[in-house]
Length: 225
Image (cartoon, rainbow, N blue to C red):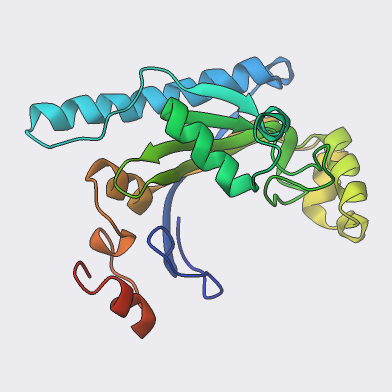
C-alpha cells in the first residue's frame, strides 16, 4: 500500500507518504480468538528477528531486540500506569520490555477514554492490537505494525452502536458482513519505512524515504535531512 495522508502531523516517525505491507488472511471461525492473534503476531515478530540476524551477518549494527514479545491489554497497561497518557504508557512498557503487543484497542477503558482510535467496521476491538518496539536512539516506542481479527456481524453491530455510526449499516460491505457473505479474516499493515528506519537505526523517517518536508521540519532535523 502506498498512500498520501495530507492531514498527517509530521515528526520523526510520520510522513505525508505512507508505505505499508498490507496483508489479509482467511481464517476459520474457530480462529477468532486471542491465542490465534498471538500466534500470528509471533510469526511476524520472528520474521523481524530473522531480518536482524541476516543484517548482523552482513555487518550492520542492529538494534537489540528481545527474543519474545510481551503481550498486554490496553486495560492492563492503564492499570499499570494510571497517571500517564496512552503514548507515555507505550513508551514506558516498551522501554522495560523492548517489544510489546498491546491488545484490545478501540473500545473505552475503565477511565472512560480509548487507548487509540480504531475504525468500528474494521478490526474487532477485542481481537486486535499494535506491535511496538523501543528505539534507544529516539528514546521512545515505535509502532511497526497494527493488526487484528476482523469484525463479524456481532462485533460490527456492537462497535457501530458504541461509536454512533449505525448510519453505515446499509452500505454494501456492512450488509455482506451482517449476512455472513464474507469470509472470516485477520489482517494488518507493516510500516515499510518505519521498519527500515528502526532496523537501520536512523533518527528520522526522511532518511529512508522520499517525501515532502515543511521548513520547520528541516530546521529541526537540518543535520540529517
